[in-house]
Length: 104
Image 1 (cartoon, rainbow, N blue to C red):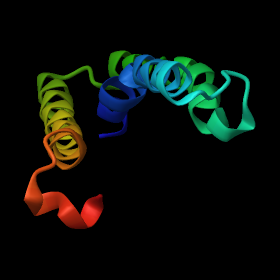
Image 2 (spheres, one colour):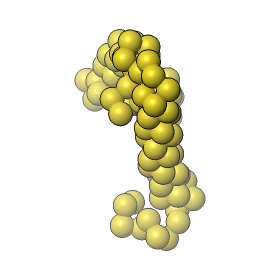
Image 3 (cartoon, rainbow, N blue to C red):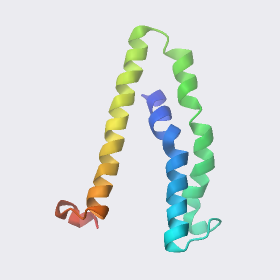
Image 4 (cartoon, rainbow, N blue to C red):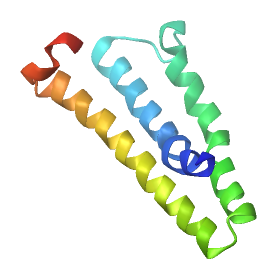
């Protein structure tokens, strides 16, 4: 499961964080070096290192067919949850779905 998080979450985090930072700076007036957005700017670099762990762990420890299948299943489950989160964000804040009113 840890290896799948390294691929599915950490492996894509830097790109996501970069998009968030660009959006905050371009649309909301934040400065890229502001402490107000440090969470995102810090994670852009930190997650570059974190994303290397998943592939390493898989290559080193998932050597049997059963272990590799387990990694694939964990990866798919992680991605399913990940997409549900982002679909919920879109429904709540972009589509303004009334079911998500309490989250706005």
